[in-house]
Length: 315
Image (tube, rainbow, N blue to C red):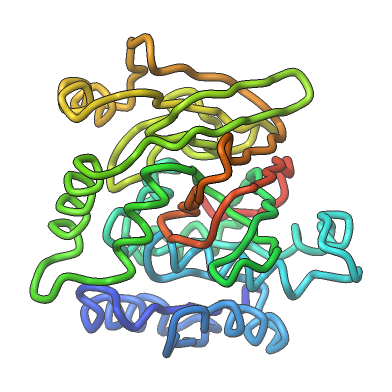
């Protein structure tokens, strides 16, 4: 029997309407609501929901909210003392079903997996036991306080301009919508950003150069509807790499429609590849910010590993 926890970001748009939709739709089921009160709170609430005996964990929010929930769920299943993936009980993790009611600004992961904000559909999928195992990304990097840390992601992690945009978005512009703020931050960063020199290595891959963005993708979409990784598959055990090199604003605008359609960009400074793990570092010692599932989390050096078919996801 499904024991459902809804982990809700109080700051979502249309909060009252969404809450009422969930309460009305799931009225006859075994469910409980958990509300976040501050950034990072959902990491703790996910662990509390599991300790409360819940076996179905539903995020209500956007990509950053979902990232917090996933990291909370993984923290519950940590059994070892070191930071490597071997310290997690992945077999018991697979017994927990995770889901999403997309209610964020970009909702890029939901687009990658084709999930709509539909409580009735979600209820039916839970009742019918519908789910599949998805890959998970494990990372090691330096956090905002320059301390080594680890974190999981399910959609996309990138370094370069995307990280800088995410960092700037931590300081909101009053009275503007999130979508407008994002557009302003992209253009302003484009005009001022000095392209990072980075080096990326894996077992059979070695790349060095200046980048606007170096994207390691599990899902296809990021940045509020940009299909940067057209060949990414959420359950194939690989990341898709998309490298946007020495590209200017005019080139970006010229190819923007192609990216929004989720198609590959044909350009000498754009390339794609597939890898299972990779190490990324600054090529000149400069600070390289990281964007992870839409949030600024810290700085390179950054190690990423694909953990195949780890998350039992309702879809």
